[in-house]
Amino acid sequence: MDGTGDTPYALDYSESMAFFNNAYNQTSAQSITATEFDCAQELLWAGSNEGRVASFYGCELRKYTGFRVSTTSDIRSILSLTEGPLILTSDSLSLYTRQGLNIFNHRAPYLDNMQCMLIPQSHKQKKIYVSGYGGQLCEMDFEKRTLLRQVSLDEGDCILLKYCTRNFIATGSTNGVVNLRDPNSLQVIQRFTPHHGSLSDLDINNMYLVTCGFTRKMDHMNLDRFLVVYDLRNMQQLAPVPVFIDPCFLHYHTMTSTSVMVASQYGHHTQVDLTGGLTQPYSPIINLTTNPAGIITTFSVSTSMHCRAFGHSTGTIHLLYKNDPQCCFNYQSVETQFANPPSDPKVGDLNDPMTSLSSVPIPITPLKLLSDMPKQCTKSTARPTPKIPKEFLDNVRVFQGLACVKNPSTRHANQWPYPPDADILAPREQMKFLPDEDEVINTNEKANTDETSNDIESTNLHFDALSLDQQLQDTVVAPATT
Image (cartoon, rainbow, N blue to C red; front, side, top):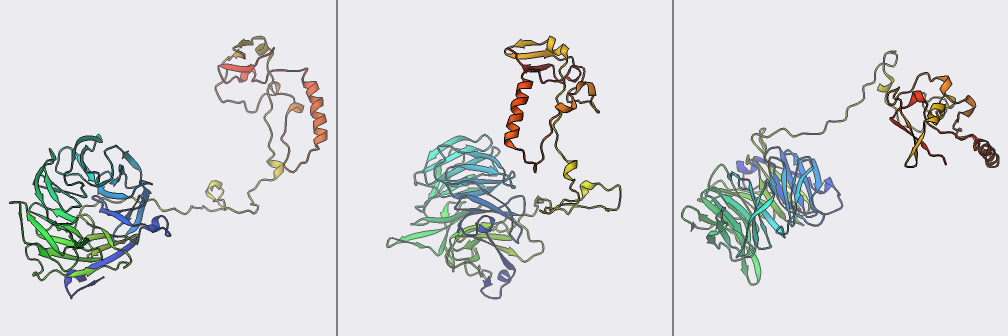
């Protein structure tokens, strides 16, 4: 960044840059299509042509969150609300939290090829106006997400929406027409034609409306080096204001009513007074350090007027901030929530007999640990099957193919006697132990043993269920006998 002349305006600003692709894939070339400063926290939101949204914290532009909104459309516009960023694509309207969680995703037939949106802050009812290349201006109830009013645009489309405190809504189109509409009926009150070509940008305050755009010459669109200004008090056009750069983006300075910040597609930025033009001694040009292979695609200004954000077509975000220790995005920002950093485990004294072994972290290693128990002490066994008392077998009744016995409810659920009673367990020789992993059993001998045991056990069938003292449920289910 360099300034033309030794002016304090150019020297009091610094530049920082962040790569949008680092949040996802460095190999993909994403273009920045929308930028917006958060209205409550020190965050900068940016959207790309691949439907992704990312946020950056502070003047250093540290990555905060990143998520994907759409897989079929690019990000057209972003508005910062108290709940989080409101994101508009060509066919959807979504609201997310600052941590990337979706609050709602609204889709409707009237959301077709949308480009811009507006939420007037002075309205008692929270309304949102959306429009685009489809030739329709829609008024929606934000809370209920329902369509209140829809009008057709005579100018064909709408690419810019601005609100004036004089109770006007300004709409700008690609044919250079600017209409002032009544927000209650959406009818045209006043029409201006500041440019013969397409409209690039416009901004409006309580007194003036300023535009920049293109003029068609010899079947080519040339950018006008003049700012067209209209006085909203008498609806008259003032003298055009010349600038040294190609004006493509505009934003009013909230501290003064006649100062406008102007930016070009090639990274030039300056501040112009509408009443004095270039005759004022305080209008230097600041050049951003941008990639000459691309152009500036978005321009945003923070509410504190300390920072300006520029989105680039090569996927970079440039922040021009004031060299001030109190530099901030908002004057009364809410503290941003960050994830807790991972803490190191606290290991107690190993010589202390009261130290819990669970406090010692287990390393991930393929080697044998000293805490590993020997295999003979960790042999897996199956719990023996208890005997079924004769009283149960005498009181069995079959219901819908199931043998049922009434539960005496002598024990609570999930209880087992310790140590278990020896008289209710099966004999020791009937206990089944699981074989070790390294034991190899001869398949032929096992098959002969299984055939012999099946012949013996077939004559002594009995129900595998709990005894009378071990019933855990109201009904015990056993297989039905034929």
